[in-house]
Length: 351
Image (cartoon, rainbow, N blue to C red; front, side):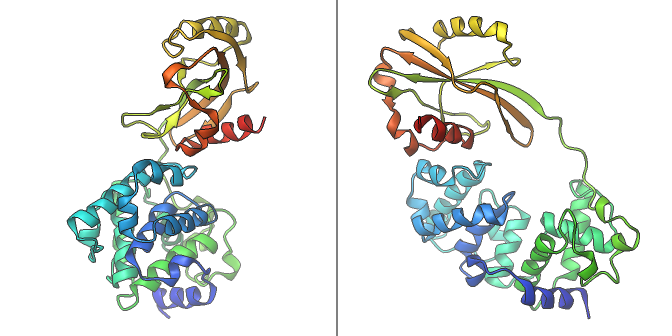
């Protein structure tokens, strides 16, 4: 039995029941693929259900505001995915008359859509035999065929794409693509794969050469940068606070946060008093009459992003008035904020 026939037979017996597997609607397939990029199924499923409920069609998504989209996206991370999703919905409505493009090449022109996503949509919704290559696919192919070319190198990307394209069942591309991704997710897992009961254990090079834990090979990541953020949670007598929207192209673009002071290093106990003094004259305080500054979390909260570790401290700053900039603290939950601030708010508002 060929690689693809064996794989599809396994898939039809073992596949998990997912809502996006019960439809050919390219909008919903696209939505699921964008949400599940760099996100586990268990985490992404509630977001998929929330998006399809709030925006059942691409027109509904296009008509939403960016803030509405980002608020629904809150907690998923990599917020550029949400912004690109919204922008592409507007492109589909305005440039394609609301009809989802139906070829790999046209789908790939959408903002935030690369080879993998375009291949998934084209094959699942339109039966185009374009092979998907994601983390699961890299893992399966590198182990079964014993390929040690780094998966995040230009030669590796080309090699694995060519192999996947060679193996795809051209008559059943949707089943093949979903099968190989599912196989990598629940059978050929990153840690402790089920090699004893694997359908390829008679031909898997990694298993035969005892290299399962070594494959796939990945080049070392970029050095992680440490940042030290001090958020100022202003609070006046009317229970108002100050939020500001992030601009520019950095992390959390378009999301809201409290005024922040970034330092070069973590504060020592002896430096805290000087920091409090500096807050009173900072541009963030903007001559507000500060009554008290209270450290909310005793130890910095470390929030890990792909290339940054954010060492974060929240300071509650009681002031006489936040003036016209203030918003009711009770309404903060209506704003899209980074998950780091969202978690702080859960604890802060419960007290």
